[in-house]
Figure (cartoon, rainbow, N blue to C red):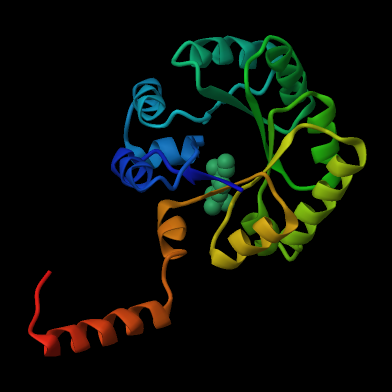
Length: 216
Ligand code: E4P
């Protein structure tokens, strides 16, 4: 499963890239707002750090407006992936852009039928939001299972990008289901390394090493 960092914070992206933990980045208007950076500038900088897809989201709601914005965004770098909302206009934009060889991430997916539409429109990625789904009393991971089954039934090539990931269990379940990608905040990705027995093991080994009086 590929890991994308769900952030527009440059230092966090550099940090994760240096450990080899990320294959791409996803941003959205809220993350750009949090970064306090100029959208085009920060996207360009991210595209220079990570070789994989970097999602940049349009804000127009109509197809013509989305195409104008996508045109500006795709000029930023070859690895920009245009993010469009899961609406009829978004799907039309997806179809037009992917037919032209541009990567598209169809975002804000909350049902398997919506994911089916995204695949039919030729999406490169579909982003079901598991955390927000859970928050509203639905089963986010069941949604991922359903989409996996439907895509496999018909050999759709659209990649399932599990989004709105809040914790390690989401990551584990996404991997068990066979999602193609998951995107998570840097804190969640780094948190996957934590295990109390790893910390305890290091502590024990260091205590015994100190008793040997040796150094390496
Ligand atoms: C995905 O592309 C979105 O940017 C993101 O995962 C949304 O997550 P949130 O529900 O934590 O805002």
